[in-house]
Length: 213
Image 1 (cartoon, rainbow, N blue to C red):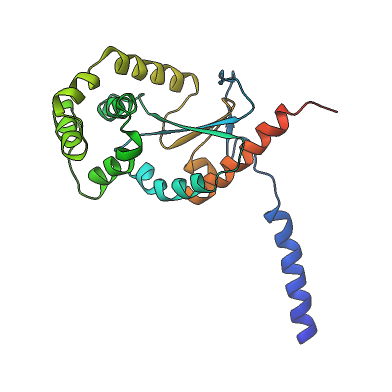
Image 2 (image 1 turned 135 degrees about the vertical axis):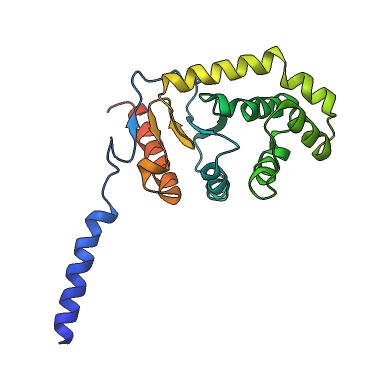
């Protein structure tokens, strides 16, 4: 009986090994962006998260993403971009780009998520968002409102919308790696699997960039 158990365990482990080392599959866990989008020059692989502050899936991803960022391998240039495809996303998209313009993003990014999803604050227009910023930073509501409505923030929103259209992004959160590969929790099979797929795509992009011997 013991030999049978050992044999069965051995067969089980042998069956598991190919699954554990199986490659991520294109069109299942990720899709290729055609044509590939231009990326900043340099040796680092750009990884971009496209998100919406009002999205519960984006909110629940943040602890996992923050852990990944804390242990992120060298050679990655990570950025965030507010989703701007849907009209419903635009107030928070403007908020994101205004945070960036004022240097508030590191301090307010997670806090803004928490205000919406934990404290259930309604932050969906210039007045409510400006009042919230004034209560949570050194920037006055008046100053924030000016930046929120500024030409620069409007231009950033338009550029984001154009880029996301080119990349065929229709849901959030979505990750774009090296301007060539797109994945999201639905494709990857969940939030935790998502970051593993991102790692795979980074390695794929690194291999593609290496000159052939």
